[in-house]
Length: 115
Image 1 (cartoon, helix red, strand yellow):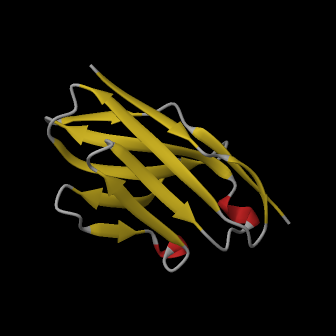
Image 2: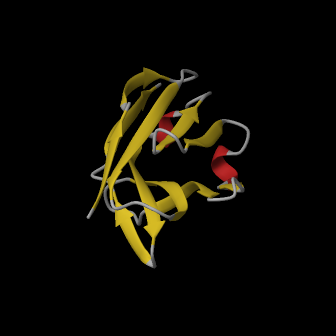
């Protein structure tokens, strides 16, 4: 099985920074791609950023220039560096991993940005 565990969420003031981590464990080889998504109550989950096994990254327009996705393959850990945070970034952030044609999700971590 595959386990994804997010951490690093919390409360931060607007303009501040947070770094989210997503540790992958279990039968995770090979990971084709990983990503960060977010969801607020009453809305659909939306993609924030993704990274392929080759290191290609993609970002949602609303985070370009502010968020950076990266991956430490040796540590099996995905990161999301979030800078210049805005109140509208408040959401539960989830990581996912596409492994052997199956999409796995973590349990999510809450990010709250105060104005």
